Structures are given as C-alpha cells and as structure tokens.
Image (cartoon, rainbow, N blue to C red; front, side):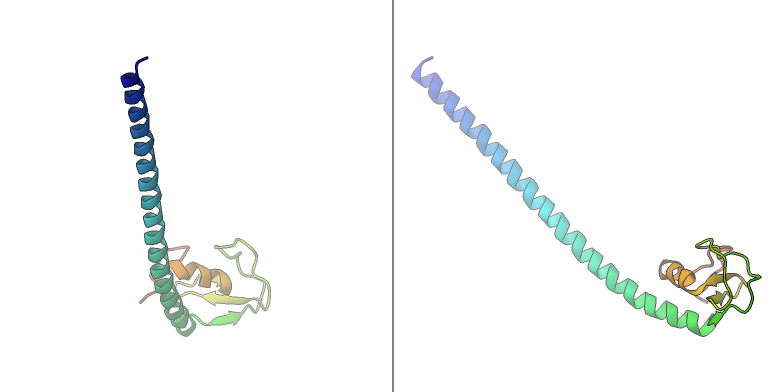
Length: 123
C-alpha cells in the first residue's frame, strides 16, 4: 500500500467517524427537544385537568350529592363491580344509576357522561 493510499484511507476513515458523531449529536438534540416539548404539553394538560376536576366535582356535589347508602339492596357499582354496603357513600345520577362516590368522582375526572347509559352530566 502506498503512502497516498494510506492517506486516502485515513481521510475516509476520519470522515466516517465525523459523520457518525454528527448523526449521534443530531439524534441527541432531537430527542432532548421532543422530551422538553412533551413535558411542557403534559404540564399544560395537567393544569387544565386540575381546573376541570374542581369544576366537575363542584358541579356533581351540587347536582348529585354524596349520600350514605341506607340499605344493602343496591346492585353492585358498575365501575368497580363491588357491592354497595350500608352507610357507604354513594351518588345517584340524574339517570338514576347508583355508584360509589369515589368511583364516580374518578370516572368524572375524564368523562362527563354516565358510565352505564352515557347520558350527559354537563347539563
């Protein structure tokens, strides 16, 4: 192998190394940017959900107050499928379905409708 061939081989090897480094740094910067954007979006949506949650629960407390169950004759809660015991807190929806208070509150964080018949709670 001549000196020119060795030099050409060295330069080619150098360029391949440099291209690899540039690609690696580009991927690193792109990944970091995506992570930052997703975290910002998540914090924006979290703040929006927090506002909606308080509004929703205030609305539900007004229109569907939480009451203690007075008998054990209720059907199981359609959300958790557990039986409703006497003196457990329940909510009766405008469509006459009965749920554990905590189950319905958790459901209503993301949904403004009945889990059974899908009637709208926001009205």
